[in-house]
Amino acid sequence: MTTAQSPSDTAQSSIWPWIAMSVAGLITLVASFVAPADAVQEELSRILYVHVPAAWLAYVSFGVTMLASALYLWKKNLLWDRIAASSAEVGVLFTGMTLVIGMIWGKSTWGVWWTWDARLTLTAIMFFVYLGYLALRRTTDDLEARARRSAILGVLAVIQLPLVHFSVVWWRGLHQTPSLLKPASVDMDTPMVLTLLIAVAMFSVMYVAMMVKLVELAKLEEEVILMDQSDLGPVAGAAVVAPSLGGDS
Amino acid sequence: MEIAEQWNWVGLAFAATYVALVVFAASIATRINKAKQRLGADQ
Image 1 (cartoon, one colour):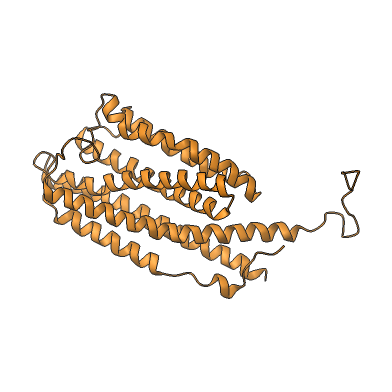
Image 2: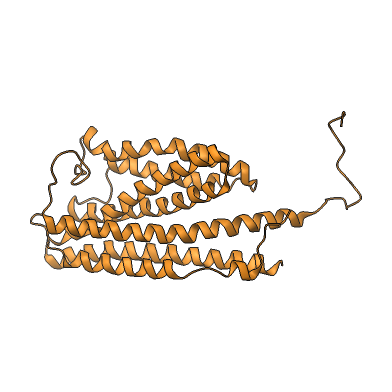
């Protein structure tokens, strides 16, 4: 069995995802600083343009992980496992960013870095659950077992998304209720909504760019695992063969 | 809060964001290169 590609095959890595990420990051930065300041929070409101997109893309990432995990369990194709794992990794990044940016915003507006508010606590739990998902994938080099176990967790863990999103509606806390993703009318002025939508679109571009690279990486890492397994060879020499345990073959 | 102090907090939030993105992207690139070297070295 051999799945390792030749060096020429593996050298096809493209740089366009990095270029797309850089441009998207620049556009987000410019849009965030051109947008008008808020009447109440003044300049601090600009943190919104990185905090909210990071949170939304974390939702998207974990949603994609759930879908790809379900598709893996159905089709047993390792491509879906690579997509699920890659999306979970980006989701952990975005959730971590959401927490850190939120803490900075919290300190500057509430006066504390952290409070055991339902939204903050559930987001932190979600962050650690998906860190656990990534840790689970490192417990075995058996690609099928790894994919099956993480797919089950990837499907089950998505229950946290509605809990995190609606926590600000279901429980009273410091964190404000949704400004855009809610049934009622939008509470923001048009220039701020447009800036937020631009930032979300740019974070989406970054998500796609990172996914392209991470799926490529996942394929390469699978090939390294398979290559290591094929390099092990027989423990006691080629002359020693495993006994037949079937008895009737 | 003074406007200058607000900008400090905004700058900190954006710095945290962009540092995280750059470090993550660099880690992906490094891991891709390492995997390619492993595969290339064992051909």
